[in-house]
Amino acid sequence: MNGDYTTQEGPRCLVTGATGYIGGRLVPELLTAGYRVRCLARSPGKLRDHPWAGDAEIVRGDVTDDASTGAALRDVDVAYYLVHALGTGKDFEETDRRAATVFARQARAAGVRRIVYLGGLTPSGVPERELSPHLRSRAEVGRVLLGSGVPTAVLRAAVILGSGSASFEMLRYLTERLPVMVTPSWVHTRIQPVAVRDVLRALVGSAGMPAEVNRTFDIGGPEVLTYRDMMLRYARVAGLPRRLMLPVPLLTPSLSSHWVGLVTPVPASIARPLAESLRHEVVCHEHDIARYVPDPPGHPLGFDEAVRLALQRVREARVDTRWSSASVPGAPSDPLPTDPDWAGGSLYTDEREITVDASPEALWRVIEGIGGKNGWYSLPFAWSVRGLLDRLVGGVGLRRGRRDAQRLRAGDSLDFWRVEEIERGRLLRLRAEMRLPGLAWLEMYAGTDPAGRTRYRQRA
Image (cartoon, rainbow, N blue to C red; front, top):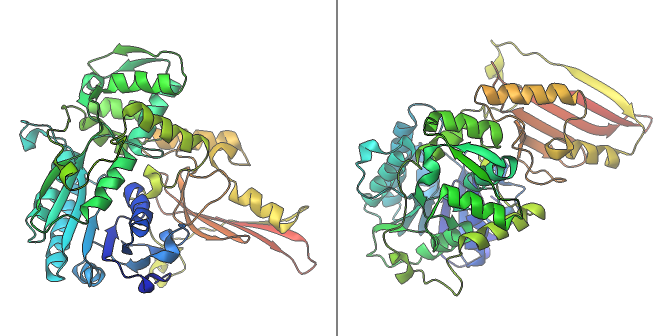
């Protein structure tokens, strides 16, 4: 447990998915609004370096586990469900169903006053069996929570525009990197994007809805656009020359997801469900949420303003969370192999050490600045080839980069690594999230030897 949340007197909110893109931004918004916040995380250490960590209660648990979920929901007024198992394998729909069922059951048993869930906007008139697995699972989770016996607000959004969101990064890189592009048929599908600021405003406001409200709400911006419109408008806001687009109907969601995976930082495993969700028109059919969460002047934000604000944050390196904030689905989350569980496996270690003609502080700045635009300091071409090979087999590659150019925090993605541990000034431990036949870590140390000389130590 962290911080002085016990001194606050507002209602208590539980936030699941706080290590993710939306959850990591929702927590400080709730705190600002006067709520006490508890976060449920499988790896609480990933949250410790967030600016708000000292003001929130952080507990360990998993939404698929009754005991830890029930304990986390104890004395909670409003529970935010912001997790999904997308990309964890072909059984992700079953995992989503089981997790939502556990959460619904435990929320009712704990006497939670309200559940708030952020799902996906589904097309009107399309049978659920024809939806993408991603949208179909989001819709099913919403039904499970609405049937929990706890008043539930299911907010349904299409494309979310904000610095660091997967949808925004996909749009940004496709538009910036390809002045001439072949485009799949889904670029002509109508979409109603929404700014992340308006999503957060709706999520926070939903906590105060009356007890009789138990329903879905469509949330979107003021404009309905095709993806083609969005790319052309993005280019104009970003000051880029007009883009030329050549439609190619043969680019299926599967093929186009690999194309997106090669061009943008978003890997095919995430790009595919995004592309599949764009096969059908996704526009809002009501704006009833305004009855309970009134729109302030100037909101919801229009597309151009949402893009302008997102680009400003990217250029100023003030991206609070990114789509890669959550671990890559299926990537190992194990700690370093120092536990007895590793007694039957094979562990290979490579250790190197060298004296450095610089202060430990200067060495640490170099260590913490590794990756992203700074690159990898030895054999950069080999790193580039390894990143490309990873992308070709569906991995994340090197294009995820860094959230911040100078500072890292526990849980950050760093190219195809994840920051598993950081002891500022001394240790940086990275866990591999590239495609590998096993598990891998890379540790970098800054220190001094008995003679007072600066020593760099590396262990893989």
